[in-house]
Every structure is written in C-alpha cells, then in structure tokens.
Image (cartoon, one colour):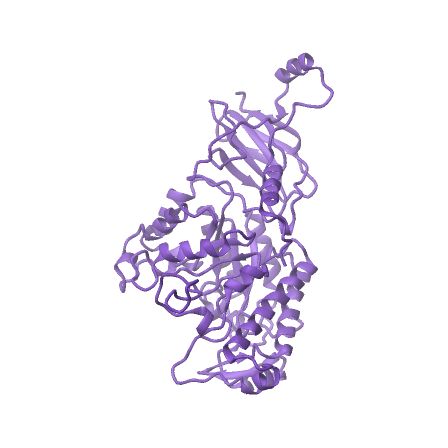
Length: 521
C-alpha cells in the first residue's frame, strides 16, 4: 500500500532530495571564504533557477523486457553452455546501455518454473531443454550483478497464473506445483493455469515472490498482463467449484476480478514488508474498458482487460496496491480501434492525482510489420515519445523486447535514442519506497581530466554534470548538463571544464552537488 503521502509533500521531498540552494559553508568568514574558494577545485553548489527543457527530462524510466519464455530473448535457445548464456545476456545489456536505457525487466518465472535456484518450483525448461534439470549454475545473481554494473535497475518479472504450456500434468517434473496440487489447476485450451479463485494459489504465488525478494538483490517485482487467460474460442474456464465455494453470492465476473485484486494487494504488502525499497508494478493489457461499455473507459473499441481477463488496473491505481502501472500500448497512432494517443491520454488521466507512476509499454517488436502502414515507418516509436511529452504523468517507457535492441528494425530504436535519449536520465523518485538521499561526495579532486572522490555511504552510483560556459547550473531542473551516471567514485572528463558530482542511492535519491574543475579549466 502506498503511504498516502499528500502529493504536495511528495513534490517537496523531490525538491529536497535533488538539492535546492546551499550556502557556501557554516561559520566561515565571507572574505576568507572567497579567498579560499579561489584556491579550491571543489565546493558545494548553489543552484540557479532554470526553466525545464522537455527534451531532456532529468528523471525518466527507460526499460526493456527480456523474455525467457519460449526463448524469446534470453537464452536464445535451450541447452546453451553457461558461458554462452552469460555472453548473450551481456550483449543484450550492452545494447540497452548504448541507447541510454536504465532498467531491465527480466522474466524469472515463465510458467511456475524458475530461471533461478528455487526451493519451491522446478528449473525452467528454457534453460536446458528439460524441465526440472539443473543448469549447473544459478543465473539470477549474474543477471542482477551485470545489470547493476551498468547502472540499470533489475526488475524480476513473474507470470502469476500460467502453470504449463503443456496441459498434460504427468509430463511435469515431480516437484512442479501443478503436479503436486492438480486440484489447483484448470485446463484451458491446450494449456494449464492455476485457478485464481483458490486461496492456496494466492498463497503459493506469494511465497514464490517473497522468496526471490528475500534472497536476491532485485530492485522490483513485476507482473505482466496475464491474469485469467485470454479468451479461447469454444473454451470454458472451469472454475465453477471454486466459485460455488468462495463466490459468496457475487457475480462470476466480479468475483474473478476480486480474486486478482486480492493477489495484487497481497503481493504489494508482502514485497514491501520484506524489503521496503523493492518496487512492485504490473504491465496490464492496454485497454482497461471501452467508453462504449463504461463512460470511464477509453475512446477505443478493442478487447477489454476488465471484462475479458478480469484485470482491473483502475482499481489497483485507486487502492494504491501498485507502485506503477506499465500498460502495453502496442498500437500505432493511426490504429482505428485503439489509437496510441487516445490510450496515452486515458492512462495519464487514470493515475492523475495519485502517487502511482505511469510508464508506457512500447511495441518495438512491431516495427517493420507489414500489416499496418504506420509500423513500416522508422519514426513511429519516436513519435509516441513525442506524444508522451504532452502528459506530465508519463514517467517513462519500456520496450518489448530485448532481441529487437540487437536487430534494431528500421533503425527505430536508434532514432528514439537520438531524439529522446541524448542524455542519461535518473530514475523517477518514489518516496514511498525511500526518500533519504545519501551524503554528498567527499574529497572530490581532479588531476587533469581524471576526477575522483571518496565513496559515499549508501550511494550506489553518482551523477556527473558539466556546467556550461554561461555558468547557469540547471542540474536540479533537467538533464541538459547530465553527462554520465557512474557506479564508482571516478570519472574521466571528455573536455576541460567545471563539473558537478552528486551521490545517488539505489532509488536515485540525490545528494547535494559538489563542484570540481577538471582539465585545468
């Protein structure tokens, strides 16, 4: 649950944590201080008022999904050697860093299996080719460490209800929860799902998530859009026994939505009780409801997540049981049934007045598709981000999916990077997860263009800004002067000049800035 902190207070905290105005130093004689300052290469900075430049947002989540299911992104195929798996993952991360992305959403639980060493579920078949087979290493620490090494948040992505791609329970490993508890499952189409109406299922999913939060240094827990299964023609999701037992006179659709809402609320509570700083969010299907069905819905005519898969993202936002929503707006601006701008506007309105953050899921995988003219244009994705600038509630974007960073269809992601990501960006502040900035860097010094400082307690990384020749310091306003976010207490200036260095904690709460002159400027 969010803290319910008033929005004005949140804004005030953001100002404080990014550093407002600071005096030269307490108790110092002004004339002596002025003389001393000429001899020093560093000082604490007083900030100047600047008008924010929308082209260079200081805080923006820029992420990519890395899917393991069906070997979509990583590993590229089953049974690869460990070194090959590692090399492929590093290649994906480097492609993300090249475009100045700052977060990865890695699928760690595709179908009640694990791409990590789990005491609760079997090893994923997408690692070795055999469900339950030990791959000879635990990938998750490596996946997290390599992400953090590159200054990227690591969000562990779970699918809560998918049990198996094969509806034959007998083929599953002996320790698979669906095989141990067949009564928890529902066969639907040619797949197997856990029944969201059973308290035991919610309890198990909660245990799985909590285990990962406790044992691994993740930054977030992420659910995708799969709740009750997407409709299959001629198939019935047979949860009648559970409905009879637990429905308590409710309509079936309302009961199903309530089951999902309960899971979301329980995960939210246990994740934050386990580690307060870990974020929790969901990437729902892009249409909550259509205006034709509900006056509160969007001006669209597509499938409704509320009615078809019983996912009520609006309820999660209103109840504050998610830190963010990341709707999958996988349609072009020209789409007749679900235009991008209409949906970006609707979701912005849905989070307005709350402290739930909004990121947009972008369809990088659609670029180059021949079934819709808009996707044959390399600038379609970039145009989406231009639209986003009109909605201050939109705090970033996440791209599906990782392999498309490598193939770069039509050069579209490079165009996004050139047009919208010409500077690095810090993560959006999330005061409910933590709002205490680390101490500013100390003993900052320059030897030529090499700048070093003493690491600050609680700092995961450091932001480096270059003050322009005009001397106007806008580092608290936007990223126009942000040149790097570095992990360690060192930076090499590309050119002589005046630089600012700040400390960042894992949530990117930012310290006061320290000024240093590098390169003999």
